[in-house]
Length: 63
Image (tube, rainbow, N blue to C red):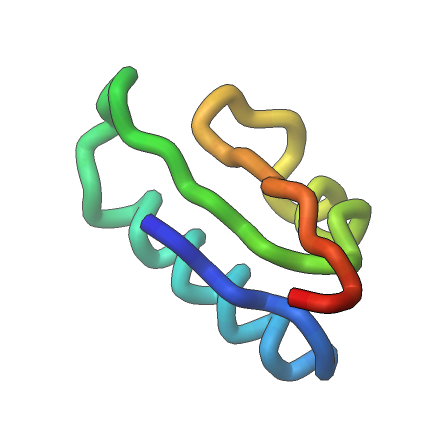
């Protein structure tokens, strides 16, 4: 699962909402990863906590 959550707070909120809903309906799988492309990693970590299945790939300003 990939999320581009870069920019406005409403975009971050939408991504967090979708991830929490996914968690509510999907069975946890060790081979599943959620990739979140964002410049505000702390906002996601505050709500999602430290999780093995969430990855924050580096995003360059030119991307």
